[in-house]
Length: 139
Image 1 (tube, rainbow, N blue to C red):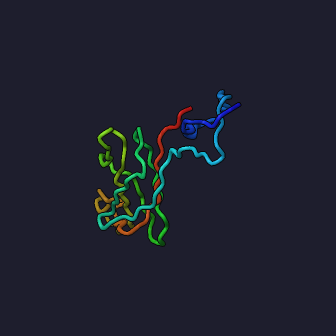
Image 2 (image 1 turned 135 degrees about the horizontal axis):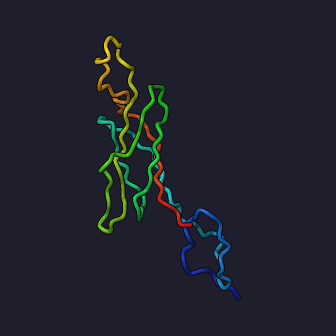
Image 3 (image 1 turned 90 degrees about the horizontal axis):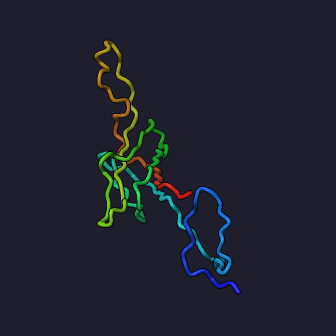
């Protein structure tokens, strides 16, 4: 007679697996770990926000950031190089997200007037950024 499983279910993978355990079964209300973290962060006066993950990652995750349209010019949001945080066990616990708003090109009289001009150099303070972080899933 099968008995209830006594171990946690495996996290979601990239492909389905039938399984081989025939002496145990999963209970109706069991859950599988989500291997992604999601958050909405609001950029501060300096155009950045610290995102602390609700649960750490074992390996450094990939980050996806999307500006939530506020009616202004588009914002490019990204994780800041070198801003990752780790706990004592080496797990990845957070990252700083920065945003830069698109600017209008200045009037062009000479080519030199746009040398060094940063199209995404405008302030993004107060913008809301939707973020998602995910680590590789086992196959």
